[in-house]
Image (tube, rainbow, N blue to C red):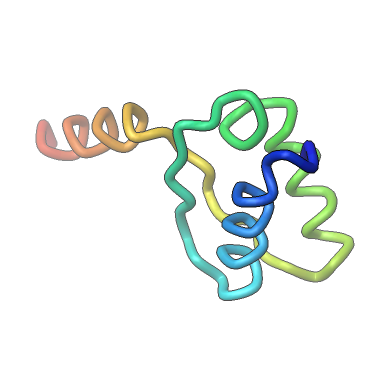
Length: 70
């Protein structure tokens, strides 16, 4: 993560450390980015930490709509 985005790093660290299931973000450049998600998962694995599911509000809304149709 870029040093200028310390808040994103803190949110990810907090969510990982406390085992939060989802991390909701609009940051598609550094957090909700497919290639970054894999890297985050590898780093957290090396640290023995769980990796939260990093999603955008739009993905969450789609998931809610899909569940309502069942």
